[in-house]
Image 1 (cartoon, rainbow, N blue to C red):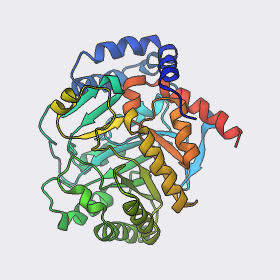
Image 2 (cartoon, rainbow, N blue to C red):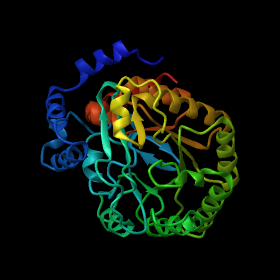
Image 3 (spheres, helix red, strand yellow):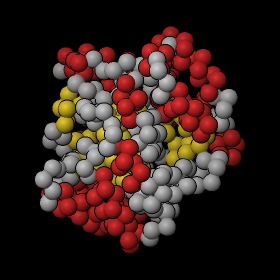
Length: 358
């Protein structure tokens, strides 16, 4: 059962390590993007793993999904390590896998700043980053040097200037470049921050992209699972189409879900939220809807189709909620910002206990 707001508050109060609580209070005095950059700089320092409260997953947390051996069930969602600069450091603090990107064929600056905002009363973020990244080839060079045994996903998208009619070329370019250096792929057609991108979630264009990538993967000597990342804002009819597309294209499964464009039920004052402007909302407010989508998809996509649950995971209970709904793995992003690396340790420990009871 989901934890109540009161119990969640107490868990966060008493389980968050004092070191991270102090660090977070300092980081939150900076703009979100500056805090993000500083955090990753600190993460690369000697002793950062110990000081952060993170630790690699226990051996008992390892599992096999999509033919890959994951050290643990919780991964980093795309968007935090866009350019694959910190994969090894992230694995050291407790992640079982890291998803890099979203990467595009050509480097692009993304949307104008400010473009990342904290909603502290909601344990949430709003972002309109716009696929800012250094281009796929730069990431490929970094990934060639990653430590052995790490599981990396490549989240791919299209450049902002590429019209939807030509989007398939961008996905092919990223797919071919990353294929030798990642373990699985994620096709991102669900970000709300690239104009027109979500139109590619419609059945026709989506099938064309996925079938082309599947064909190209089939021609290679080593095969990479392909996942589709979808929005939480899809209707039941659209989710039915997603299920149909996954089955018809033969891809491995779905990541549910990306950020939402909805703003209902927030504790942050409406005027403050409106002043932040457009963007995708992530964090605790997305938890319930993303779990609903996971459960709906599992009903139409039985195993061996894979579902990775993401959205509002800021506690072990929230992670187990996704697993109980049918997810095979989970990912975090906003929860890491608010709870720190010790969140990963709590999820990994809870997963070991949960699995022993299945």
